Amino acid sequence: MRCFYVLVHGTLNWPAESYPTDEGHPPFHPLGFYCHRYVLASDEVAAANLAFRRVRGNLDKQTHWFSSGQATLELDAEDVESAPLYKLLKPDNRGHTFYH
Image (cartoon, rainbow, N blue to C red):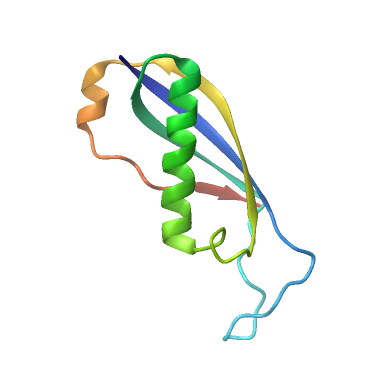
């Protein structure tokens, strides 16, 4: 097992219908996002798959976009490379950098 750095790019697909929020303005519908994860895996493919599961689960826990059927998500590993093991000791950065 090795430590890997995985840079994840997510593409969000929203239905054509858009409903206003309680405040009367359109909801926040980003086109995509970037984030990264450090994971312990046997190879690059396993590292990417583990990072995808963590990103999807964390984002849905924060927003409920996928479990409620508001959006679908496509994930891609932009970069997967070996990283030093001490990176796993740091708390997970659970943030996402969204773009329109």
